[in-house]
Image 1: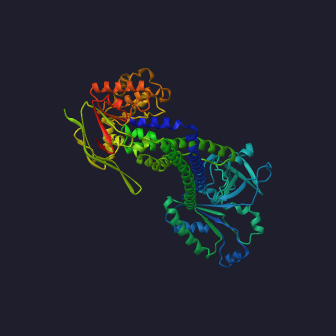
Image 2: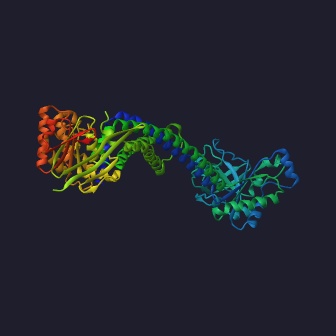
Image 3: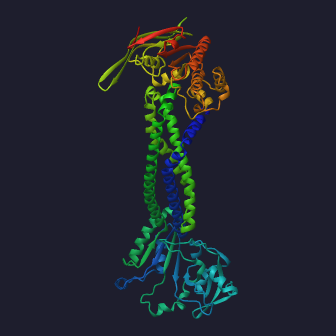
Length: 415
Length: 222
C-alpha cells in the first residue's frame, strides 16, 4: 500500500517536471471526455423528455383516433357502410377482448362558450364517465360526469383548471355556463394537469386545463356544424382502450385491429396510436443515437490516446538514463512497466477529471443558452472516467514496454 | 573464508550486425567475503562488462557464476533484479543520480525495489548519508553538489541496503585527485567495516588501494 502510494507520488512528480507538456498532452483526452459527457447528458435529457410524454399517454393504453378522409376514401367508406368511430366500436372491443379493463370515448365538438370573457376559448368535448379514470385525471372540486348524466342526457359540464380560473366565480360547481344555445350546469373542476412541455413530440398531448367536458350524447344539441356539413355522422373522435397490464398492449392492439377491420369493412378511417409502441420506437432510436455517440466518443478518445502515447514515447526516450539507474538499483522489467503505466494513467485520469468539470460546464451552458433538456447521470460521469483510465493503460502500454525492454547497460551510458 | 564470487569460464560475445565481437574470453574470478579487489586494464579490455556480469546487470554468453553459492547464470530478469535490489550496490563513474530527486530521495531509491520490509528505511538512509558525511545536505539536488559530493551520494545509495557486494566502475574517474583520495579512503573504511568491494579502474594508483589487483587485457586476466 505504501509502495503503491509512493509510486503514484513519484509519477506525479515526474509529470510535474514538464507541466506544460503534461497539460498539452491531456488536452485531447479532456476534449474527448467533455464530448462524451455532453452528448450522454443531452441524449439522456432528450430521452427522459420523450419518455415522460409517452408515459403520460399511459403505457397501458391504446388510442383509436378518427382521421379526416379524402374524397375517394370517403366514398369507399360510404360504400362499405363505415361511419367512422362509433359507440358500437367500443361495445365490440369490450366484448372481443378479455384483457381490456376499460374503454373511454371522447368526441371533440366545434361548439363554443357564449357570453363569456372573450379571451378564453376552451375546447369542448363530450366524453364517457370513465374518461377521468383512464386518463388518470383528478378533480379539485365537485364530481365528474356520471353514468346517470349520460342516461338522462343531463346538461352538466366539468371545466378544466384554466377555464375555471378564467371564469372566476362562475367557474365553480353549482353555477351555470352557456354553450351555444344551451345552459350547462358546472358540476366539477379538474385539478391542474401538469402537461409535459412537448416541443417536438410524435404524440400530441391534450391540454386538459383548457377543456370543458360534457356528457357523451348531449353533443347532439350542440354540434351544429356537423348537422350542416357532415355527410357522415361521425360519433367519436377518440376511443381510449385501457388494458390491465403493459405486456397485454401489443396483443390487444392486434386484436382490435382485426375487430376494427371487420366492422369497418376494411376502411382505414381511424388511426391507432400505441404509446408503448412509441416508447419502444423511441428506445430503438435512442440505441442508434447511442451507437453514433459511442463512435464519436471512441474517435475522440483514440485521438487523445495517440497524443498520450506520443508524449509517453518522448518521456521514455528522455528518461533512458533514469531507466538504467532504476534497473541498476534493482528494478525488474515489470517495475519499469508499472512506473510508466502509472504515469500515463495519471495523465489520462486527470484529463478525465478536467474533462468532466469542463463537460459539466458545457452541459450547463447548453441548458441555459439553447434551452435543451439535459440530464447528468452517475453513468455519464463514470463512463468517461473509466474510458480515460482505459485509454491511459492501452496507449501507455507500448511506451512502457519499450522502456522495460531497454538494455540496462546502454541505458546507463545514454547521454 | 568462503567465496562470495565464484565465476569460471566466463565468455561474453556481442554481435554487431553479422560480426561477433568477443569481449571476455574465459574469465575465472574468485572473490572472498570482505575482500577489496581491483580489476585493472586499458579501456576496451572488457573490465566494465565483467563488472556488469558480476553485478547481475548483464549475462555471460557462457560460463558459470555462483554468487554467494547461488547459480545466477540461468536466472530470469525478475530473479536477477531481486538479487540486484537486495544484495548488490553499484557505484558509477558518472555518479548516475536522478537529477529531479534530492539527496535523501536519491539514497532512498533502492528501497523501492527492496524485497524486505522498508520500515527502517528512513533511519537506514540517514545512517548511510552520515557515513559519507553529507548529513547536512539532505534537501539538496545533485546539481547543487560538487562532483566529489555526488559520488559520495552514489556510494551512500550503494550501501544503504547493506549489500553483500559493492561494485564500483571507475569511481574516481570524474573527480579531482584530492576527492579521489577521499573516496578511496571511504571505500577502505567500508571494506574495514566488512563490505566486499570489487572496483574497476585503469589507474594503477587507484588500484593500489585494493588488497588484490587483477589485470585484464583483451578479455583475459594476465
